[in-house]
Amino acid sequence: MTIDGRLSTGPGVSSQVLFGFYGDELSRWFHQRRAESDLIMVGAGTVRVDNPQLTVRHVDGPSPVRVVPTISGDLPTEATIFTDGLPTILIVPEALPEQTIRSLTANRPAVQVLRAGESRVDFDKTFAMLAGLGYSTLMVEGGSRLLAELFAADLIDRLIVKHIPIVTGSRDAPTFLSAAGSFPLSRWNLARCNSIGGVAVTEYSKAGV
Image 1 (spheres, one colour):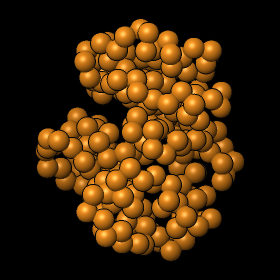
Image 2 (image 1 turned 90 degrees about the horizontal axis):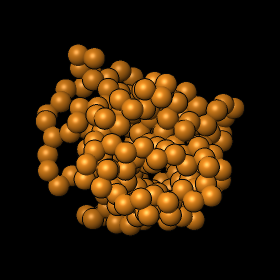
Image 3 (image 1 turned 180 degrees about the vertical axis):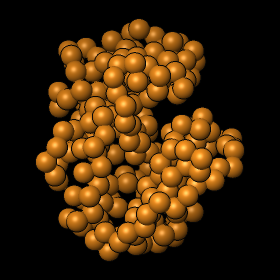
């Protein structure tokens, strides 16, 4: 996030604009975290705005399997996660029509769909299903609505904040946690604080975990 707590420079603006402030050292460190994860998750909004690759590129190592929860299936079929042939898991509710699922998976054998929840994605069930498939580590990169839902479900046990050294000055840019409702107050322990390539990287662990 930026110094003023924003995930991008404005509403609807790709967060990839901020990556230009990373530098090579932080890019390598960040992609090493990806390489150490079985799965990587982003929200549907992040796919629509950023069109991310979610792969390991700046270090040697395997790319994690991508996971995207979506209630409506409103994802661009030309997005990289559908066209590069690498594994992607979509998490959808039971209520999502089969026709929508077929439009997202047609001629894309690397795309798998799991149903979890009735009208919304049930993240407790999602995590249990992923564990049942043999996955043990999940890295979540955003966006803010997805992060808020996972905090509300108490499903995060480690938090890494990269403090990008700019101030956006934007009142409308997404904050770290954007939610219509609220979630319980939680206590975190400071685990590590480093400066990597001129960017402060702070790691927290969930108190009691």
